[in-house]
Image (cartoon, rainbow over all chains, first blue to last red; front, side, top):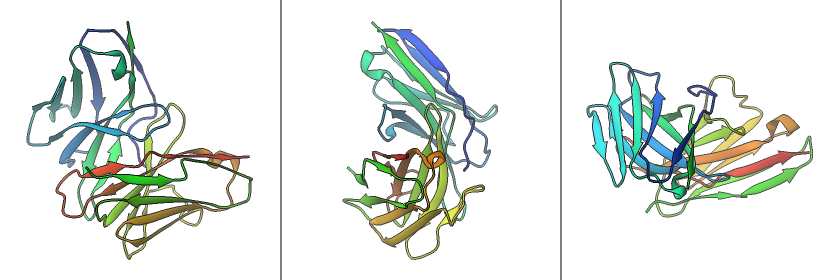
Length: 113
Length: 117
């Protein structure tokens, strides 16, 4: 199977702080990127997406930044809450004959009260 | 919104038997469905892309005879793990892409925890 990295680092933050989760992607031809949140034993949950022709997109409490020069994606979560504790994955949409979504390594976010 | 139902949510089977996992798009048509495998504390690894009415496209290193995929209709894809062994124990997740969606439009099922004993 195809994946970007197999390690799962952990980011620990205090409740109320801002969190920044980073991701490196591999394919220059990826046209679309998505951040997912995954809680234990569940499928990925969509958070926010960004097209490759953009460098920033904001949602409710979340911001995604895209740096195509260094193939880097970040997810910023403002005022992190205990309910934000989960594993976060970036994913890149690779277009071609059939579109497919390839996931990055993931980061576990632990929010402490 | 789009909903993907995956069944069963967990299954325990004996080594050597086969297990079938279903993935259904409940309120939309999906020409393409995807199957992922996830080991503990690891990322989702794409196994194969399932296309309605044609053969599935498997990722490099995934045994097509081991993981049989059938996409019989626009709302149903199945993954059968044949002759399961303990090393096949994993969390299997499907995703469906809504017909007519541009980039994106991926909806994920809630996953199936397979334990082979």
